[in-house]
Length: 222
Ligand code: DC
Image (cartoon, rainbow, N blue to C red):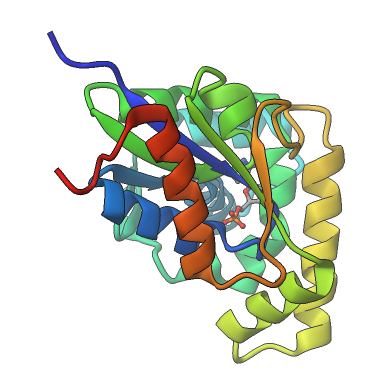
């Protein structure tokens, strides 16, 4: 009998530090890591490649259901490596519309649960992990940070783009992600909210590990 699945659900807006923290926590606990944002980005990438309007729910839903998608260190969409392109401005601009369709969300949630199936410990980062994908996760963390701190982090990742442009894109995307009808970005009522504005990522990782330890005992040191 396989043991029960242990889930660290890590949600929050763009630039809150999720990816850095999620990878480090997975590493320390010896858990597998999944970036669910990369999955929505992959759908947006495929839509753009096929010239499909990101607002066309039916056609975007069909792309999501039919696509062959592999998300690990690399992101492979229908056989094509899209690791770099999914981070580009074109995909970033289209992704909120793509992720707003219930048809897309239900397919992604299904795939995320399938990915976790058969694993023993996972760290999953996204917007709806604690609220929708794994509402029974024992460790739920919601990262926040001031708008300025988040925009600064994002623009440091995108050296080729103007700060004001990055900040404006981010604010627009947050608003769309938080106000959409289908599973909007929100902290689960039982999530621990960590404001990362003035914290180093090491500090945040330490806090998440403390929460994990309270839930499961010392894991990574065995
Ligand atoms: O984390 P990210 O910036 O790569 O996410 C890209 C987009 O995907 C983000 O604008 C919202 C959406 N998303 C979502 O709706 N649900 C998730 N679980 C993860 C991402």
